[in-house]
Structure formats: structure tokens, C-alpha cells
Image (cartoon, rainbow, N blue to C red; front, side):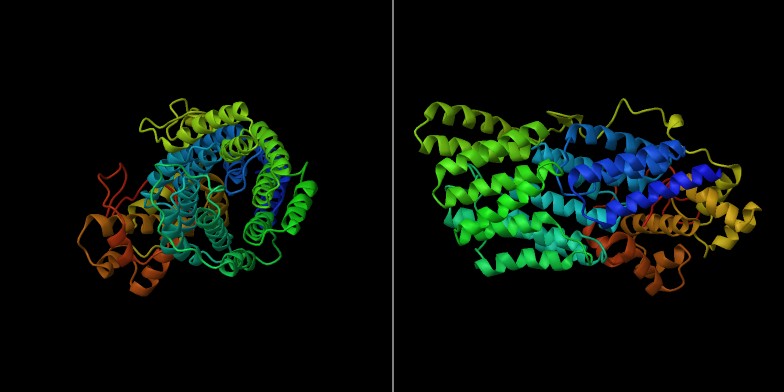
Length: 500
């Protein structure tokens, strides 16, 4: 690698770290991600390019252009797939499921995320993210019991296993929003966007102070120094509905005004919440204006989930004001969007985005893969043939006949992971399959893959999959078949690369 390429890569990585560590407005985050991608392209680093594109979808914040982000995630997914980085391929699929949610296709989002959850190679952080996303989708569909149960029983324990991330804050935020919907169901049915055939809701309503506390807990769970405006919006909405006052309206107005140019998706959501509070305050004319402004933003963004919420409220406002013609037209548009969110398509077709999971027109992998030196291919083969041993990086270095630094540098560029992680993750991948496909005990499986301490094996397993080996065996469905290149014992392992 030339010195210039190294400088470009370092600049791109620094930008991606900035995106990860600081909650930037949507426009700024997307601009930074695309700038990092351009630097990666100049450095001829396809994996770094894919990492930059993946940043566009790894958040619960709505995108300013979901269609474009969908296509870019497809491109990133193709690059990771061509280079055998299977864990990142799964990350891209979850990010695409989140885009389906933005587009108002909750059932398709649930379907896609659930399929990814069946993959043993899924990292703990992505597994937690997928469960949170599925819960949010259920919440938006009015299935509040299902949402609350998944958040408290599944997503929360997984998030607690991922310290240093924003996952715990996102769980608390999702719980807070679902409790607000629960409050509207019990105390403000004119505001709740349910429908006659929705499932029964049996969850009890927490007191207001507990709902407020969820947003405070979410803020406290964020990495030090971070602030997420969606938490402020959620708490202001809760206060505005449960203790109706103009203070919540003023707070929402201030957030919308401060982010008008920098974060249009946040503004659309803020104006929608403002409209709900104004409806609660019995100010229909002001609510109508707030919803109309929110609708304009949401349509420009093609964010159909927000558009649908706004249309239902506009329809009810028009009806209350005696404007039956507008009430009917907005309700028809809302009804169409609602049906799109409720229908899951077994053929994996999205109304807006084409195939939701498979990409038959995927770019040829030869154009997307990183060229591997011969000694990297030799190292890969040696590792896969010796997963049953207690294998150290020095063993691989000795086999390849190059210096450790040369091997580590080339391996990281080609595989987007270190030699040590490659060894560990392949051992864990095959061990996870052995637990599901054989009756061997956990101790036997650990010995089978070169772990002479069951405590070390269990710790490494938990760090990757988010649960103990014994719990994994009881909660995961057994794989229907063995993929090419996989084994559950000594010898070659899977041809996929996992990364922590």
C-alpha cells in the first residue's frame, strides 16, 4: 500500500469514527459517510467503502433519502459478500430491514429481520438491533403487547450484553414510545392510530413518572457526552399528552426550528408530535397547520411511516372541522399506506424498493473483492484446516513463511479482520453449529475446537452470540442443512469471515 493510500484510509477511518462517536444531524451524518466512501474509493479499499455505506443504515434515525440508502446498502452488501465478510453481510440486511420500516412496510421489515436472526453468524450487537427493530415495527402496527414483551424479555437482556453501545438507550427509547401509544389507547383513543381489527391490548398502563423515566434512563445509557434529540422529543410528547400544556409545544417548536436544514426527518417527526399535543390541547386549527407542515416534510423524504401517521390525524381533524371531502381523501391515502405496512410478501417484493432480500442483479464479485496475496490464501486454508487445534497467530505466521507484520497487514486489508479474530470467529461459528447438530456436551464441543478451558470457551461464545452455549442450544432452531464449506468437527470450517 502506498503512503498516499494509507493517508486516505486513515482519513476515512477517522471520519467513520466521528460518525460512530457523535450523534450528528441526519444531513451531516450522510455527508460524512459519503465523504468517507469517496476517500475509500480513492484509496482503492472496497471494504472500507462498504463500511462507510453501512454507516448510512446502522441507526434508528430516518434517512433523508431511503431509496438511495437502500441501493447503497445493496452495494455494500455485495462488497462484503465478495470478500467473505459474512457478519457484515448480515449487518447490511438488518440495515435494509430498517429502511423498509422507514418506508412504512413493517411486516416486510419484520420478515427480513427475522430471517437474519436465524443466522448463527449474527453478531451480538446486530442481534440486539434486529430485536429492537422488530419490536418497534410491532409497536407501529398497534401490537403493543408483542412489542413490550420483545423489548423487555429479549432486546433488553441482549443490549445489556453490549456495553459501550447505544443499544440500551434505544431499548429504553422504544419502550417509552410504546408506552406513549399505550397511554393514548387507554386515555386518548382519539389520538391512537389503531383500527378495528387490530389485536387486543392487555398491557397495563404505567404511571406517567415511569414513562418519563424511560427517556431519562435512555439518556443516561448513552455513551458519555452524547445527546440524542429523539429522546427529548419523546419526553416532550409524553409530557404534552399526559400533562397538557403549551410548554411541550414550545419545546418541540424550538427543536424543529433549530434543525430545519440539518435534519429534515427529525423535523417531520417533531412537527407530528407537536400536532398530537395540540390535538390534546383541543386546538384543532393549530394542529392542522402542524400536521400539514409535517406531511410536506415526510412526503419530500419519502418517509411513508411518518406520512401514514400524519394522514390519519389529518383525516380525523378534517372530519371534526366538518370538511368531509378532505377527511375522506386523506383517509383513503392513509388506508392504502396502512395496508402496505400490514402485508408481508413471501416473494420478498417491496412496494417501493424491489426485492427485499435477494439481489439477482448483484454486481460481479470479481469487481468488488480485494485481491489477496498468495500467503493470505495460504493462511486462510491453514486456519480452516486446523480449527480443531489450539491455534495461535504465530503458528499461522510460521506456516506462511512471512513476517507477522506483513501477514497481519495484508490479512486485515483482504479480510477486514485480524488473524486472531478470524481464528476465533471461525471456531465459534463451527462450535455454534456443532451445538445444534450434535448431542455432544458443551465441554466436548469446546475440546473439539481446541479450547482446553470451558470457562474461556463460554466467555468467547457469549461475547460473539450474546448468550451462553447451553442457552444457545435451547433457544436456536437447528439448521436445516449444512452449507458448503462448513463442518461441525475437526478440519475445514465455514468459508465465511466473522468479526467482532
